Each structure stands twice: as C-alpha cells, then as structure tokens.
Image 1 (tube, rainbow, N blue to C red):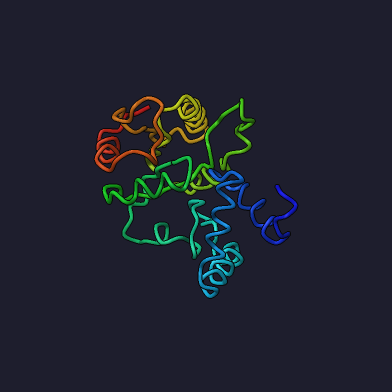
Image 2: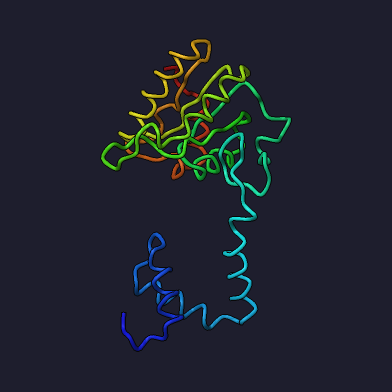
Length: 202
C-alpha cells in the first residue's frame, strides 16, 4: 500500500481487507465511505464494533449467538423439548427457524468434518451435543447438515456416536429435497419445510 496514504487510514484498510469478501481495493472504498459519513454515525459504528464481544454471548444450550443466555429459542417454554435439530452453523439455524415450521430445540455443531481443511471431530462442539443428549429429554436428533460431502461424512460420524452412546435416541436427517452439494442456509423456506416434514430415519 502506498506510503502516501496516512497511517490511520492505512491501518484501517489493512484490517478491513482481512474481512471475508474484502480485498485491499474494496477495503479502501469502505474506509473512504466511512470518512464521508457524519461523525456521529462513524463513532456509533466504532462503539458497536468495540462492544460486540461484550454484548453478544454464546448460548450455553445451543451454542448460538445471543444477547442473553439462554437465547430466546432455548428459553421459550412453548418449544418441544424432545426433538433436537443439529445444524453446522448459526445461520443455518436462523434459516430453519425463520420458516416457522419447526418447533423443537436446536444445537449448533460449529462446522463440518473436513480433513483437508484440518477440521476434525475435536474442532466440533461434540461435548455440548453429548451433554444435551445425556439430559435424557431428546427422543429424536434431526441432522440438518446439508448435502455436501463434508455434511455426509459428519452425519455418518454423528450417527455412529449417537447409536453407540445413546441407542434410545432416534436419528433422522432432512429429506433429500435439498440438492446435492447445497447448504441448509441457502435453501428456500418451502424446501426446508418439506425436508423437515419428510425427514428420513438413519
């Protein structure tokens, strides 16, 4: 980056360019846009970024992001307590829940098994899953992990773990209305609804 760019701006652009989807040129455009904003707006954005880690929590029940612990979904007494829908990431949980057709519990695994990317079973939140199943209220574990190769491998691993340690828990998966190679978070609501309604036993 040019030495003629003032140091504060250069530092900001370097930080912004580490965000997903932002290269140096895009980061410079974002930084220049921020400089054009009213001062009160840029300071408010800075405060929100600064306070983000203090104001957000990981829900101790599902592992989702929330302003409270437990989150609103886990703390809702109207939700069914005997079904647990396992998703890879928080945004997949949001996509499923926005449809309004699933009324059970969720748990976020924190990724999918991907040996080439050095994501193994120790990288996943299996301890939280085991703790939830040990409570004894879950009768069915729904695997909503997608239809990628990584999702299939993860589903097979989870199924083996549950059958070995919790033989009384039924394991099912979303119906294959989801195209091969697709991720849950990108599916439309009707596809997700039908995938849940016609889920398959494993």
